[in-house]
Image (cartoon, rainbow, N blue to C red; front, top):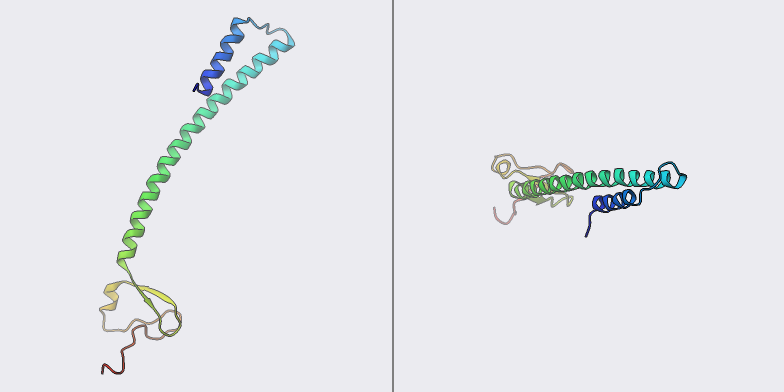
Length: 118
């Protein structure tokens, strides 16, 4: 399939071959339209290049984001508060401390010990 630029160049060649009279009204219009088509095909070509660059950039960002999301899943522990049902995420290192983690929503302890276990 011919590109837009090739098609415009073909039409410009036809216009030259037909020796359009640029002093007539019709000739001026046709030559003006051909010049406009040439400018538009150049702009479309530049836009296509820009879109291709942006697609590559978005793909890179998407890959980076996927890697970050994958890493994020591994770094936190999910705990559902037994009192209010709020889902809370903690760094596993924080759970090793002596202090019991508290729910940021209701302020109660997230990890309840069974009374039967004591």
